[in-house]
Image 1 (tube, rainbow, N blue to C red):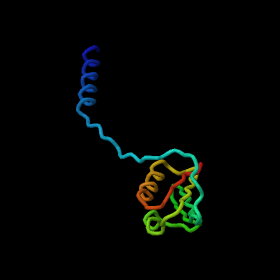
Image 2 (cartoon, rainbow, N blue to C red):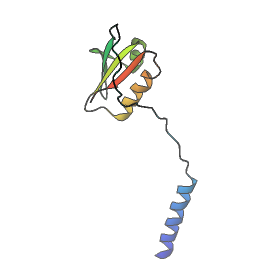
Image 3 (cartoon, rainbow, N blue to C red):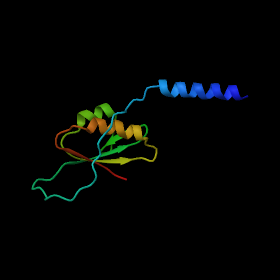
Image 4 (tube, rainbow, N blue to C red):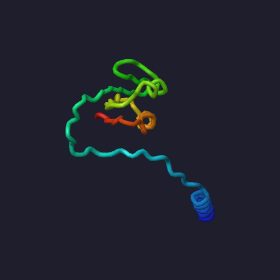
Length: 108
């Protein structure tokens, strides 16, 4: 019985050492900061609600690709349904990342 356990541990060690470890892409999420002075012009706010199968922009159901074309500058408020996965939220944040003049707030 002892040689079988030794072989199992050797195989486990071999597969652990021969596997590759990859680093997944990271998205930087900044924490809330102190308020800034109020601007003279009002900020356009858009409301995005995301679920496991649907995305709505101000009440209109869209796909993630259509959402990318419809968003401009302003403030995006993102609300999550109870069935939203973390990957679905990351997909949305990747689409919204890099937009000039757009701030994203994820609501609880």
